[in-house]
Image (cartoon, rainbow, N blue to C red; front, side, top):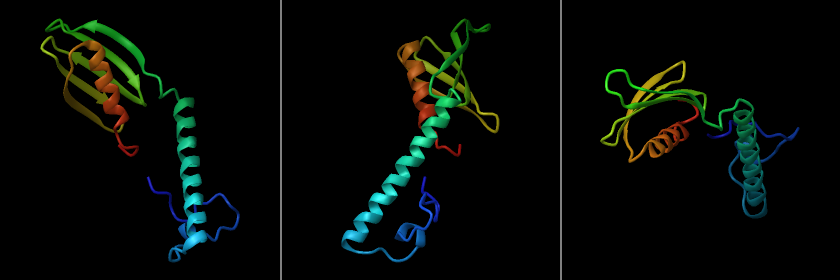
Length: 132
């Protein structure tokens, strides 16, 4: 994610990333780069805090049961603000049904065990863009 122009936390910012002027040279360029890096770290730290406050960083098992039709293990999880249903087949195929409220997806993956299936599902959620 690129920070929009003018998102600097300083009251009056004259750095080139906030003013849109051509990049400076030498020491001014290095100072502007450090400023952008600090702003990015601040943004990522704020995002991590919000996710932690909402409980999105820890997967929560909602239900586990055998499928009524085939008897395969099915688990329902909430992770990253997304409801996941994991359907693990004995041959190692894995179907994930994901519902985020505004959208839903069905994804097919491979795993060797139910633990690997969970890791694959959570890695898939972690790889989603923030706007998904």
